[in-house]
Image 1 (cartoon, chains in turn orange, purple):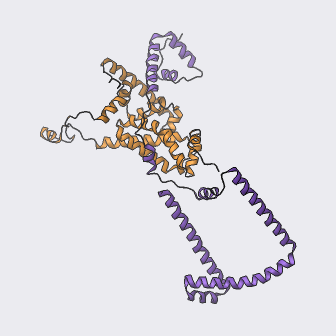
Image 2 (cartoon, chains in turn orange, brown):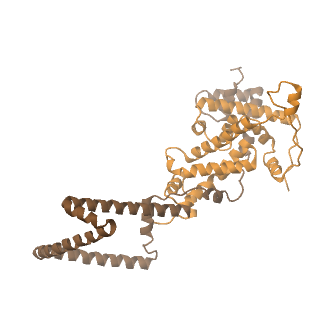
Image 3 (cartoon, chains in turn yellow, red):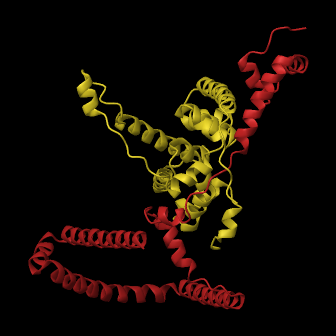
Length: 212
Length: 195
């Protein structure tokens, strides 16, 4: 049997590469990562808006998917399965972050001004780190800022539709949502993006210059 | 002429480039209605901006970081096939030589088999003699093996049980041998996964 070279793998459809991965061929695993690391990272990064965190969550996604590659069923698209898991990983993190959020303005259970002041705190101002500067550059355009203000559910739908060019049916299958819900989310996301972009233009927000 | 402005979901239909009955009148309306044309342009500009946002690459080395934590399982039939494949020569001349050798060996074995089959009486006598000798040798060897593994008491028990005892002893030995083979395979597979 001919050994599969890396060049051969690049020309194979996803289903064939997954079949090779199920046979324990490490180059097939690496080919799947090579094909999808940028789309998955882009989706997760735009969901969580933190580069370092997105790296970890993307890594977790691939580890989960490839560790259970034997459970993949070929009647579904591999990309849909992968995006489903990456979206779930991002949404789970956002939900945990929401639960863990501490108000800077004091405890919501405070019953007096003294208690409110005692439970509030201020963060010291810090200069932007290089990572934050990179994030600001990557996600600093008007459309990126507008995307960042969408609800997570709307955000994943609109990104899968317009960035990954998925059909409504594929998005519904990927996110385990009814087709009507997907159409509603995309419609609302488009509406909110239009409004947000108009506001950003009216406010005269300056877009950071691109580095030379 | 339809003077109703387009509904938001109708704008979405046009934006998604849907085709079918009812879409053409919507397009015609947009062409003739400045308000709806402006709304359509706004929707298209948002869609265009979304389509242009780039894919962002993670830090270099994602594959290495992932693969350091993914166990790779190789099914037994794949590893068996790979073990056989490594014996097949890769060069054209070597393959032809190996094929010729296998062909000659196969022909010799086939001829020998046919010759033996044509000498039925000689075969019966030879196998009878060999069978008796082999029986005695096998019984001695089995007895020695059972004594070595299980001790002399077991041999006594087997002899008392007779044929049943022999079958039980052979069955027990077969089970132990299979368990050893599977255990070695599991060790080999886990070693391969770690490496």
